[in-house]
Length: 115
Image (cartoon, rainbow, N blue to C red; front, side, top):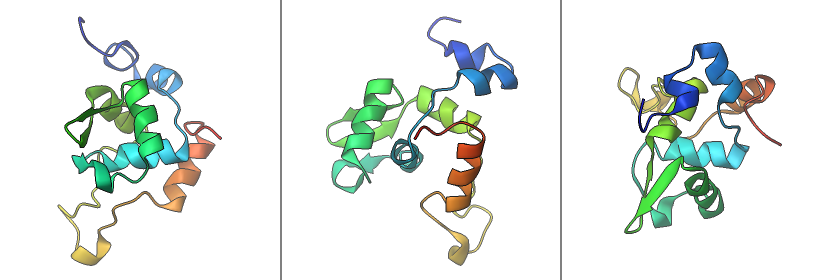
């Protein structure tokens, strides 16, 4: 597949989990935030954002940051692409804009987070 993500597109779930890039907690939180396009002044960590850009998981354009397909593949492998905290099925009070401590703990136990 030309232009594809070899570790994601051409792999089963076990191989995806094994080959998926590992992130630090700040990188993961920034990547999760970039599921929506974010203006530079609102990105939670410019350092983490720059690291994501260097890894090819995010890109920048005229002061905006957006997730790349590779970044979406990482969130998908981490089990975070189907999260519903933006309220498509829940009540307003259930909406959260950040990951929960339990999610970080689970991902750390699964070996996805560095540090």
